[in-house]
Amino acid sequence: MSDHALACLRNTFGYDQFRPPQDQVVATLLAGQDALVLMPTGGGKSLCYQLPALLRPGTGVVVSPLIALMQDQVQALLQLGIKAAFLNSTLDMEAIRQVEDQLRNGELDLLYIAPERLLQPRTLGLLDSCRIALFAIDEAHCVSQWGHDFRPEYLRLSVLHERYPQIPRIALTATADRRTQQEIIQRLALEQAAVFSRGFDRPNIRYRIAQKQNARQQLKRFLDAEHRHDAGIVYCLSRRKVEETAEWLNREGFNALPYHAGLPAEERAANQHRFLAEEGLIVVATIAFGMGIDKPNVRFVAHLDLPKSIEAYYQETGRAGRDGEPADAWMVYGLQDVIFLRQMLEGGEAPELQKQIERQRLESMLGLCEVTSCRRQALLSYFGENQHPPCGNCDTCLDPVETWDGTEAARKGLSAIYRTGQRFGVAHVIDVLQGKPTDKVKSNQHDRLTTFGIGKDLAVDEWRSLFRQLVARGLLGVELDGYGALRLTDACRPLLRGEASILLRKDKREAGKRGVRVATHQRFSGEDRDLFEALRNLRRDLADLQDVPPYVIFHDATLSEMVEQRPDSLYALGRLTGVGKRKLERYGDEFLDVLLSFQS
Image (cartoon, rainbow, N blue to C red; front, side, top):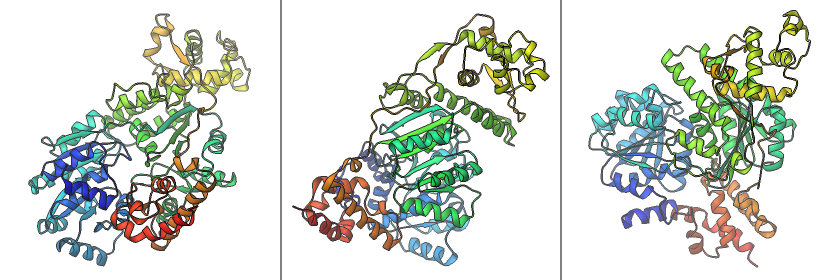
């Protein structure tokens, strides 16, 4: 790596060394070659194109589908003294003309642009007249029709290779299995690109999944025990549930805001701004929230409903712990979630091929939930990483799952479903198994069946768990008629005929904790804690003056390093991680004053 690149890394970004494979990616782009970068969220993807854009002549053009991320990145870059701007639908015509003039005059280091705007003839004509350092295609998985977040406009981005063959391109993603990776290469004409993969593991995130019972109370116990004053995101599948959960959290003493596509645009923008700017705020959201959110100190992501796919789960949980500090991915789910998602899928208007893809994704997500081995191993193997050892930092590693021989119970349950005509949901079948003479049981004469009362040895929750696991394994189907009637599949025949047995997991009542971990600054006490709070208050005041999120001034990790190192000069302050030349000039004196006031 050139001395020039290392000097830029230190002076501009405040880092002394690259994280692998950043140095290799930077060298590839500086040599004018293409690159495909697969790196987990929080792994430092942005630096891979930002630094080469500064060192190569011209402007780096970054294609991003995410308005929130564009604005966030530009704010952070301006803090570093980098000349950056964006072009998207939030700008009026005068602002657009100003940015275009800056680009035309070579006054920008980086320009962020939405793919729709990039592909307009007017924009391509503008780029023809400008000096371009590189093209960066962020969220490159959006090009894949097999991916979970397909954007049709991404299919046309191969025009960059056709129109500007001499300008290096870099495609980046944190979410792509092998099939999606190949489609990115094919559709973006990256056959000659160097491929860099840092893997998908996020070792600082603890994955925990439990059976849903009383989801709100389970969430409250989790937050009370581990994240009472932390920033976090709670995901729900429906807008109504988002709003009700946010209201409930506020009644329980938390600071929570709703976010979903049905809210007025102004309210959505205001809630997102508050989440970025304030400490300890919880956003309750549908999947409409989170893409492009760069807040580094999100300490937990909780799911009150089952995500649609492992890709979605990985991307949503990846919004926790971007600063590398300990974070939690916590989820509860139940059979009703599976029924709801399948009803949504089958009731949609997507072509049959797309529905088949979505079915496969949901089955994989169910498999992750029901696995009895290391949760992280299962997650990473989905993305093609099959050699990962047990992680020691997921619920199944920390509190190994007990299993039981469910063969006989499963046969009883399957027989009860068959004999009741495969027309009833879980609750009714369990009533039959437990011998409860309800009006519905008696009116259907199900109290006369041979299966009536043969399941009294298991509790209701145990039967629910059994049926959920049989559905997850494909031995049972669920009719999508609004009633969730259970039906047998061909896959259950060997079990019914006595040709196969089945081991089931014993569900725990909670996504249990062991060895609660906290971020570095949360371990401070006494004077160290007072100093950290004083530094954080200064950061908030400076951010409020500029109407930017506090973390674009300095990350929590940088404030923690200030507390630990206690620098007593501007030179010493400037050696800390994340304190580049421009930030030292802008903020050094004020932060040093606070630090010196705590010197004994």
